[in-house]
Amino acid sequence: MAEVLVYVDHVDGAVRKPTLELLTLARRIGDPVAVHLGANAAEAAKVLAEYGAVKVLAADAPEFSEYLVAPKVDALQAAYDAVSPAAVLLPSSAEGKEIGARLAVRIGSGIITDAVDLEAGDEGPVATQSVFAASYTTKSRVTNGTPVITVKPNSAAPEAAPAAGTVEQLAVTVADSSKGTRIVSRTPRESTGRPELTEAAIVVSGGRGVNGAENFPVIEALADSLGAAVGASRAAVDAGWYPHTSQVGQTGKSVSPQLYIAAGISGAIQHRAGMQTSKTIVAINKDAEAPIFELVDYGVVGDLFDVVPALTDEVKSRKG
Ligand SMILES: Cc1cc2nc3c(=O)[nH]c(=O)nc-3n(C[C@H](O)[C@H](O)[C@H](O)COP(=O)(O)OP(=O)(O)OC[C@H]3O[C@@H](n4cnc5c(N)ncnc54)[C@H](O)[C@@H]3O)c2cc1C
Image (tube, rainbow, N blue to C red):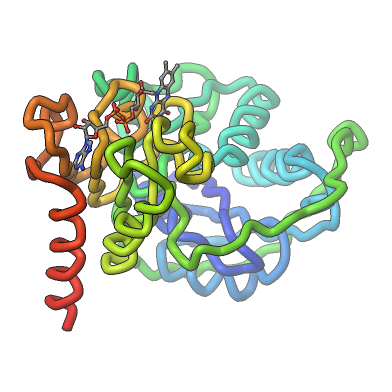
């Protein structure tokens, strides 16, 4: 069976969920071979093997953390040369897309970004994308070279499928031309204790209807009762009520959770662009004519200051 390279997203060897999703999708096309760059490959390999990696190609070099993405592209290209894969899969993070695009240019291949599904096809893997502010669903196939495909988080439920996960060292030569941009400082983001917005299984977002930064704790309380991330519309962000890093939409983050709850958000096309691929959408809005109700699975016409706290209490009581 053909091998499929899967670029591993991890924090010091702790493999992040989008990589497990990639392994699950990769198995539809061939045998997943994980590419782990950085420390703690052996620890990561246990998880990667559990989710189907037949092999883990590992490399560690100071250049991976000292410079921006180019040394990682050198490593992924070395893995590509070693394996001659049927496809290369990466998570659709900003970094994943940059690494994927650079690799595609180097190996003369086409790239598909932000896929939300992947299936095997007679002439190569077929990727599903949600395009034009999520108003169309398209299926595409790379026609030139080895397909490089980035996949959005939450596009598949990770399924365990134990495989060997044998760790092999990958020889990487970092080119001088890959050391053009050095990282001079790093500031860890202050942790909210909530899941990362783009990876969260549940997102609760607030909009202009929240009516002030001082009211956002109402949204946060519901999010915390569900173990969710908190998002915001651009109107709420522009008003300074919530950080820009939480903006969902065309000019913010794109999310695709199992459950998206929009409170006090009208459903402008630019907001939809970032959340329309969510599996189940719930809206709370006091205007029954609000456009958000056109795309919801469940809608509540009501004042969010009544509905959201009641929902939070109900979730808490059911959790016991
Ligand atoms: C180029 C461009 C890019 C953009 N990018 C983005 C983007 O990335 N993300 C984004 O979100 N927007 C984006 N926008 C802005 C977008 O067009 C809308 O202006 C914005 O999404 C509106 O935010 P909102 O729904 O919170 O506010 P509004 O449209 O003002 O809606 C507020 C809603 O809250 C309801 N409401 C009020 N009070 C209550 C209450 N007490 N209880 C319940 N409901 C209540 C109202 O009925 C209303 O439907 C962009 C615009 C442009 C031009």
